[in-house]
Image 1 (cartoon, rainbow, N blue to C red):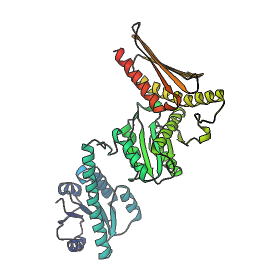
Image 2 (image 1 turned 90 degrees about the vertical axis):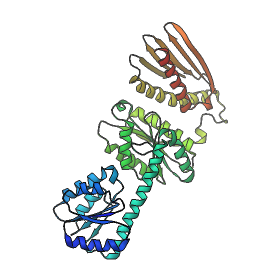
Image 3 (image 1 turned 45 degrees about the vertical axis):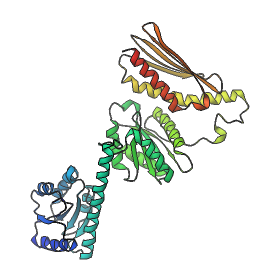
Image 4 (image 1 turned 90 degrees about the horizontal axis):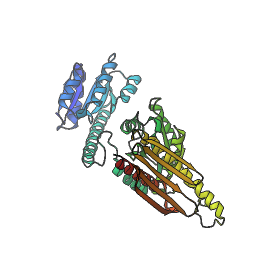
Length: 406
């Protein structure tokens, strides 16, 4: 009966009235009436396109229990449900809406109203089924994940960048605070977020516990309220931070960079939402009209400190949970950053210096069992090194350490 309509009622008069209206709609649909007793089991067996639930007084708990079971049953997730009131009850309607009904009618509704709402519910069921079929295909292609049906890490960036070309919006990067990452999975956090945001908002996984969100045509003030709502939906033990930015007059790549920088600063404070603003041209450290050498060097050091400190701190907290029996230390000061790994087999250091105002030097040394297995020096221009590139260097350094100390 997968193309059918089921009416749940114990009233023969209601059954006859609804049946006559249904048969006038379209003769290809199968119509069947069942009683309230064990109605869920019967609906699950028939898998109809539409359920019309006749609600009488004093059975709200039974109704809500039925709706909850329908929502939790995979084969019924696309089934539309219309609540048919014997006597209209606003509180019951609100509670039923929270449980996922599609629409409602009263017994004294006109035939035109009945027809339109039933046809609308059938049409919605068709669209929902069509969407689910598309998502099934995307899941098989690993474009979206099968748990939360959001974009996977390999495709999130591409999807958001294309969307940014067509519409303005606010882009946000969310991550659990560093000290609770072992207590909450990205999947659990994503599930909470998805239940709060709109269907038109775009969600996807990014690297290192990060979740990317795109709020179409939504100003930053509204996004802040949504972020606060997400935090309230989590338990008190689970705190998140976020960086976010409007994209009206900015390319997505730049917006992504600024939002991630804002997130890094927010994670240092814990449970903080920071709005990222694009630096004004006269504030950029690499502007050509700066004539004073010392001022350039000072600005460069300040800029790099704002990148290196959060990155070193965040990386230390992440890998302290993964690299057992390994001491991790890091320090950033006076134009130099040092990240150090040490265990019984040896030690490795990742140092970065910026003595001038145009060049940056990175030196990597792996001293394992008293031997320098690998020593590497990297020189790069200051304006070519961003947080993403530095993060890649540091990740490669840690992977080499893991290999050498196995």
